[in-house]
Amino acid sequence: MKTSLSALKRSMIFKDQSKLSFDYVPDELPGRAGELDSLGRLFRTVVYEKMGQTALVTGPVGSGKTAVVKRFCDILKDAGIENKRMIDTVHINCRNRKSESMVLLSILTHFDSRFPDRGFSIPEMIEILKKHLKKRECHLVIVLDEADVLLKRSGSDLVYAFTRVQEEDPELLGALSLILISQKSIIQLMDKASLSTFKRTNIIEFGKYDREVLKMIVDQRVELAFHDNVVEDGVSEMIASMSEEYGDARFAIELLEKAGMVSEEKGSDTVTPEHARWAKAEVKPFVFEETIQQLNVHEQIMLLATSRLLKHSAYCSTGELETEYQALCEQINKRPLGHTQFWQYMKEMDAFGLITTKRSGKGTVGNTTLITIQDVPVMELIEFLENNLLS
Ligand SMILES: Nc1ncnc2c1ncn2[C@@H]1O[C@H](COP(=O)(O)OP(=O)(O)O)[C@@H](O)[C@H]1O
Ligand SMILES: [Mg+2]
View (tube, helix red, strand yellow):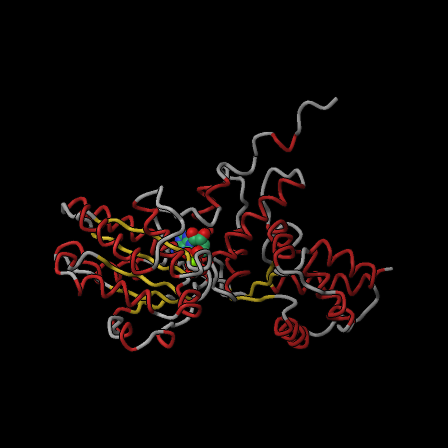
């Protein structure tokens, strides 16, 4: 009888897989120093002047809104300690707390974990919140993440109530701040009264991540989550360009984790560009057979040549491709295309999304064009094309 399971052995690939989970917030957030600074400038008054502040953070999925605000709240609390100002923060995801009373309830259980989950009206709960704030003499930063879900369901009454808390009670002046996070601007979801507190300057817009930053984000997770030298060169760059289209760090980190898992499943001791391609195919399935059948024979030969060159590396050069292409033509008795036409075909395949070309950056001699395949594991392409062309 089996008493041990090899899958339960300590991973040779991952050092600490929890560093790839979406809840984990790294200390350093590449590419977001400017956004942290903007938040810092807004919340300076909270630390030094006993004032409340409001901010609205917007940006597409995976642009780091949640991570940056969480990190910022930690930094803010530390600044409070240094300056003898008690600052407390509570982060609520409105997608999971869909009603106003559920949002309030999570704030109150933050102060008192045994607070009953029913039996109190919204005005009563706001009164209890005020008591907590007075008793503790702390400044509370309430973060409403995915705030659009709450606003669409329940309107902006609660947001308004939060901003009113300090106006109604002199003792609570400067006791409360509010950070709203949403993918899209939620200005149109607010009524005039709450809108007046969200002045234009308090909106911080996050853009999509570009390839360079995505690579830094992936590199950081490679360091944190994988054993040394396990992830091969070129993998993080490849993942960065796979996710560039979406500018989404979540997608990039998910690809990295999947690539690691594929590598483990295959019993490999490194994570290769091919594993990243498998990961991409799993995350976003791609129907390629139909597309390939529509290619003419030269395009198919070019694709096969590219796939063969990419079996063990992330990129190949156009020079290498042309040579490989000519060799394959010879093998199947086709006259190869001339250089100009070859380029023309290559550009078309790029436009078609079958291959991806990019200009090589610094460090390479001259300025050549590099080619890669991102959406399909090249082994699948090779098998399919060899069947089509060579048999
Ligand atoms: N600048 C960054 N540096 C490191 N990790 C990041 C960065 N931005 C986002 N992430 C990570 O990417 C994932 C998605 O980010 P998240 O903050 O949830 O995006 P959003 O809230 O904008 O949808 C999380 O795992 C987060 O830790
Ligand atoms: Mg988020």
